[in-house]
Amino acid sequence: MQQEQMVPVTILTGFLGSGKTTLLNRILKEDHGHRIAVIENEFGEVGVDSEIIEKSDEQIVEMNNGCICCTVRGDLIRILGELKDKRASGALKFDRVVIETTGMADPGPVAQTFFTDEDIANYYLLDSILTVVDAKHAPKQLDEFHEAQEQVGFADRILMSKTDLVSEEDVKKLAARIKHMNPRAPVKPVHFGKAPIAEILDIRGFNLNAILELDPEFLVDAHHEHTDEVASFVFKSDKPFDGDKLEQFLSGMIQVYGPDLLRYKGVLWMKGKPQRVVFQGVHMMMGGDMGKPWAKGEKKSSTLVFIGKKLPKDLFLAGLEQCLV
Image (cartoon, rainbow, N blue to C red):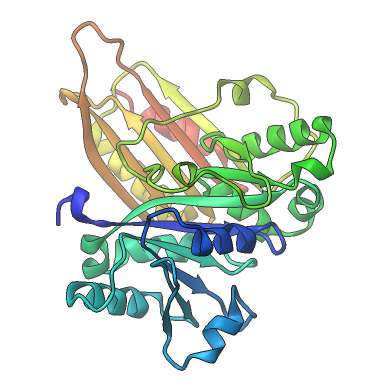
């Protein structure tokens, strides 16, 4: 299937009580003209609109605005497969999928589903991972729960809820902390789940060819009082990479540090290649793609960002340096 025909999928994550459900209920009830299948990836917790779901024996419930709601207790590949078959046969109509992960979940395995199963990978396009962060409670949650940190590390975009309950100064401090953990995700406030649908869907944050947006200020503010387990670092170079060396090095590092590597992404200048090479990964899964050709007279360079738990930054940076031509 061509990318244009693939069904885009958004993974919505966020710590317990961050406002994911408010946002999701709004997506399910609002008349936005999108036909969305919402999958609740709950593991035995009471989920969204559970009374709607509990009343029906069927796992898949159609809402009155054309959205569909289903609960998964475990097997995501199976439910995505069922939705695909029902859509193909005309039994269900939907244009996109939103998956809500449980508040304590690491979204990594959900994202990996879209790489591991060929049928799923060819039919669904992972659009982005959105993380809702509660401005009032996040500082404490980030201190106490590594899951909250991982959800920030995985995000392509961060929606900050409950900003009206804290001072502007606190919002700024929290945003700065989040940027240190994940410099590639824009942070936007969201009130009572009222995020414009355009800011949530079709943002192609996970797309290999999406530009590598790093907040330049992230590199400026070096002192940091929180010893967060999840942190990020960036490698930049204006020399080309040797493709074989780089592949060997990254493969080796992923073997060892894969479980702690939440997200990594790069736009690379490879020796002998007229185009930029774009690569990214989640944990042990890595993919590469040809990007736009370098323009005549354009200054070529490489930028890589790594986000993970207690990663040996010096080892990565020194190793990458060794892979340059």
